[in-house]
Amino acid sequence: MVYRRTVNGSLPRYECLATRLVRVYSFASGPGGIDPATVKDITDQGVTATADGPRRLTVRVPAQSGRAACVIASHTCLTPDVFAPHLIEYQRGIIAQYADLPLAGIMKDEWGFPPDHTGNPNHDRYWQRLSVPAPFE
Image 1 (cartoon, rainbow, N blue to C red):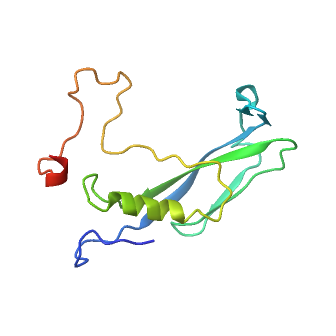
Image 2 (image 1 turned 180 degrees about the horizontal axis):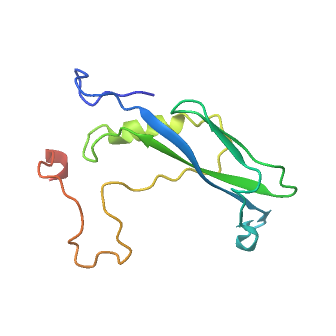
């Protein structure tokens, strides 16, 4: 799915620029879900990943008898500003592209803030845009 940043399309389209494999984990599930004691990084154990252009990644995982695999991939995209009014629509479009996969879930990492593992108690380490649209003032 491709969006334009402005109504007249004067800025670049939102496109996937790159796709790569980050890691693959194998695990066993029980009645309560994933058994944490069984989670194992198998990225370097016969897993192959082939990128077919910036939008498609084929990952082959060796058979894991009685186990499932979690493939973690990274997709670098041009993306709307965090204050763009169509941000939610844009993100729904990205997720809809995976509707044909039997996913257990999707995780989207935050962007726009530098990492801060202290919780930033002083609230002084956030990036801020100087011109904030009216809905966010």
